[in-house]
Length: 231
Image 1: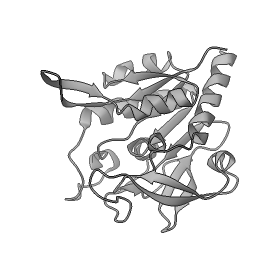
Image 2 (image 1 turned 90 degrees about the horizontal axis):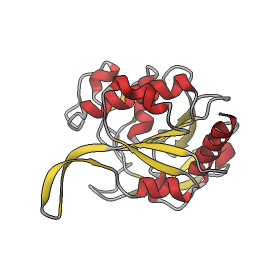
Image 3 (image 1 turned 45 degrees about the vertical axis):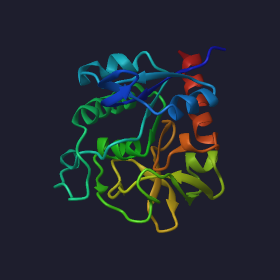
Image 4 (image 1 turned 135 degrees about the vertical axis):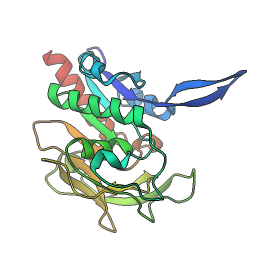
């Protein structure tokens, strides 16, 4: 059986390599490596016109919305907190369109960190703009335990409390339409969200690409493979 094609969204930023200093579509190598280790093929999806989202999703077997900049508060009807980072408007527009297209098409969807937050916003939810205790230091991935909610898709993949790699200062506040919390940190922070079955739609607040636990990505790849086989 051929491996499923899984699109991963990217940053759009100024970057330097060799003799060049140019705008670049960026993605930490840990993301495609996570997909590859999980058994899928990774395709980078740099920001594009939102009108191209449905056509893009139509070529994929699954979608991963990667981490990155804070979601612009106007997207969920809030004023920016002084601690909220600068907006990435091109990413916001593109990735929200991709999420809408993926939900409409019924393809498996995994949101990672910012991607989970954007999934919540896409479905009408809101965010806490600053949270202490979930970032070890600037540029340093920390770890903390998360506990699954019994009976959820996430709990079926990871049934026990697990230590996860984490780097975030925002989190879900009000859940979006039909979303349920499927994991929590010790302080009660929502650490995973999902749509009820039969949809395979999951968001995790942590960074699985920075760890060794492949159960979440293998769940995504299995769902993508099943959809590709049916197609």
